[in-house]
Length: 163
Image (cartoon, rainbow, N blue to C red; front, side, top):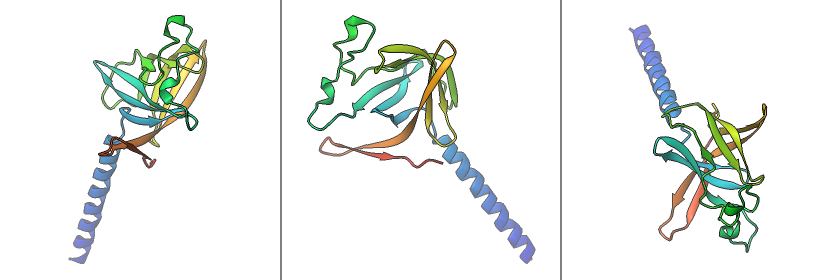
């Protein structure tokens, strides 16, 4: 009798373990807020594609982030636009639950150039953004964050725990 109870406990524990891992895996998505090296980006579904909008730029105290313009853009007509609010990626078809997307492009405001790109949702929960030019690729890992909106309009940002 005790052996059967022990087996049931192991089976119950195993079922709980499996379901919690599935739930954790389902919570990881390319869609959400991400901390980059210089900004906070919101990745979302825009029609049938993925888009990545700059929500906040990290600037020195006293500088208005909305005063940061797209000065380096190769297209001179776009150099007067604010960086906050621009979409950094295009050409990535939205696929729910995707772990890798390729065939799109990413805009690098620092260089003012657009590169062929791939996006990977890593096992640790980070988003690897890869930009390529003539078979040479560089990448940056974006960290998942939670953004909470307070009643007074301010935001609280927290890093999500990696797996």
